[in-house]
Image (cartoon, rainbow, N blue to C red):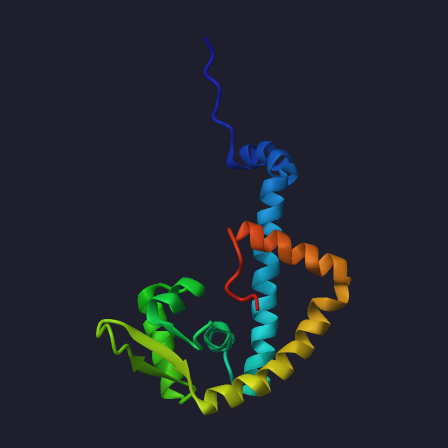
Length: 168
């Protein structure tokens, strides 16, 4: 009986690479992750350098403005963003300290705290949106025609299991 040496890590990787490289599921999720990371880095960098508004702040302000009541509970903010409840609290604290939003108590449930945009927040959001849209046009829209954009919105909405919180 012969004992075979275990394959080296290099041999194991070489054997795995063809199946990994050709698996469309891995490719799809990888492309989605890479695209999202690149857009967040690029668009977020421009937004912060040109407007002084971090992308995470911008996204919270947009979610609040798009909400039916023009306000969200803290748990709704957490649900609509990629942050934990603790991360959302710290994020909202920083945005509130900058004067762009405010907390308001719910008159019927003292455990509920709403987050509302302030006048300064609305002004910052309006100015930042103009800049943000110009960069979105340059980074995303130039690569897709109207039908492709509509298809992409439909597909991403489906993957996100329903209407995205960022749709109008």
